[in-house]
Amino acid sequence: MDNTLKFIKKLVVMCKVSYNIKRKLMKNLILKLRELLYNVKKLLNYFIIHKIYNFINYKMFAVIDDD
Image (tube, rainbow, N blue to C red; front, top):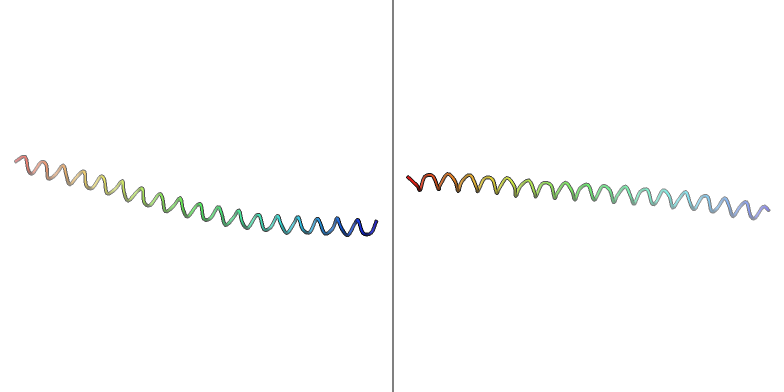
């Protein structure tokens, strides 16, 4: 009986440790994903702003060339 209790206690401790490790891993994974999404968002914003800027420049030069 005593050995069974020790075994159960060891299992509980192992489960707690593995749970904490999983939590840390998930937290790190979520932080990395958040950072990745932020970088993708920055890139998309950069390209969209660049496209608008080029479009406006093209239109302005087209208007100037028509004169």
